[in-house]
Length: 301
Image (cartoon, rainbow, N blue to C red):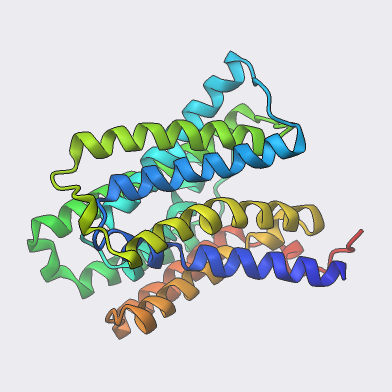
């Protein structure tokens, strides 16, 4: 039974995170991006609050810890998630997921710059493979760069990746330990949701609610319930049963699932150069993060 629970948790994370970019693309078809991001995070905070109240775990975390959560929320949810959502108004979900897969490279380079990690020959090979993948992406779509909306979307996406990397390095640098991750996550979701909804009213030119399609609303709710909450619990359940390096393999699976579903459901064009870019980026990230423990069986308690 425990093996089944672990398998279900891992499949949940792989499938849900693999459908995130697809769901965002569907949601922004009729809903302004900042509304999608803001409502997603706010609904997730409400769900998390109900869970905490049910468990009797809701409490004030203190001003110092709140400051940590606000910074983390700003980097990971408002900048990373928010700008990725805005970028998908002009970029395909497959392209967004593939470029976002390079975020571990930025984390690695930032960690090296701050002395948190050593640079090796193997890492250099991985970095070169990833940059080769990026070159294939823009070689394949060089004509699209003439479109200002496309260029702006690419710029936002790289800003989002920088935000995600900064949040990851911020956590590493401070070595923040959490006694109640769910509680901290509530404050992160709530802050991000409120701020992004404010951005939605400030920066959205047209937000006629009657134009929001049922399909887009459903995708947004899916992102809240499954993308932000269910996958989080499944991910942390898996972390309790297997090593973090083993769970990290999901990052490669997510990208493949995302690209495949974008082609299957949204009929997005996947060229041979795009496939070569995906192979280079995924293997490049794998080479940098490779650890023999990834493939060692872990005893489940």
